[in-house]
Amino acid sequence: MNQGNGSPDQRFLAIQDLSVAFSTEDGLVRAVDGVTVSIERGQTLAIVGESGSGKSVTAQAVMGLVDRQAAKMSGQIWLDGEELLGLSPDEVQKLRGSQMAMIFQDPMSSLHPFYRIGDQIVEAIQAHRSVSNSAARRETIEMLKKVGIPAAERRVDDYPHQLSGGMRQRVMIGMALINSPALLIADEPTTALDVTVQAQILELITTLKDEFGTTVILITHDLGIVADVADHVAVMYGGRLVEVAPTGVLYDQPQMPYTLGLLSSVPRMDRERSMRLEPIPGNPPSPITLPPGCVFQPRCTYTDRVPDGACATVRPELLPAGPDHLVRCHIPTEERREISQEVLRLLAGAER
Image (cartoon, rainbow, N blue to C red; front, side):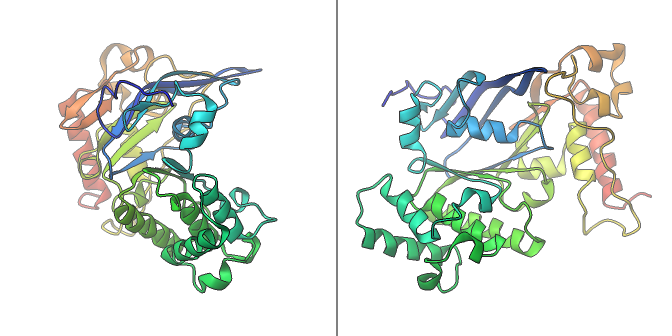
């Protein structure tokens, strides 16, 4: 396997200036545009944004699931000192399941409907390790118990359609963790689950992360579910990172207007019941025709704070706004902080 010289970031996972574009009949789709982000070993990074923001394509690029024949890719992805984009498909295949694994958002389509869940997990074990069928089955049953499948000795022989959505998602988590990967990517793992099961799944991922020492990337469109599970949050919009910060900082001092919009659309227990949620106006941009300046400019309500119409013409850089806090916005830092505190006061119902 090709060995790199070590990540320039020296963190466990470091994505450097990653860009992914697809050629279509309508034009070039810029799905990911210059993403740079990293994560320490054993921590959880949440990547948040609306549909089409580039979250899942970023994760697929890390996993080596982007078709190199159909996409133009550039940049670097370093995993534990090894550069992944320079590896052959066969080399990446060896890493999937053993060094890195992914939980997809639809467990019904991810699990094969014609095979028993136990057989599918056994296959995942034997794909990477020389283990007998009986030993692999025992290990599978133990993992099903760890992820909270009741009567695992009997359920191991069930087919996917015999399980509820939450149980199928637990099976997917167990399958992803069965070979103790160092990196786990969870792509919208709570989609289509009720709120009680959502909380259980997130708690399960956190518990297993601590038990196995796994590094986690949690991909979601909902800022409301990451506060208690993520160490850092990266907000994406239009294929670009627009804000990156430790979780506590992002919730207490959000500075990018798009992040403020996401927070304004999340129901909160500390706000007045009579207050309506404030949706972000307009629609996300087409990745084929991204705005030339700030990608969020057509939907932003603060563009009048920036002189000379720079929001519409000049692409803002992702610049430091504090310790470990990066923001992509033309509004001056102090003014962004004032806007942030005003919005947070309104969300808490302190002002009417």
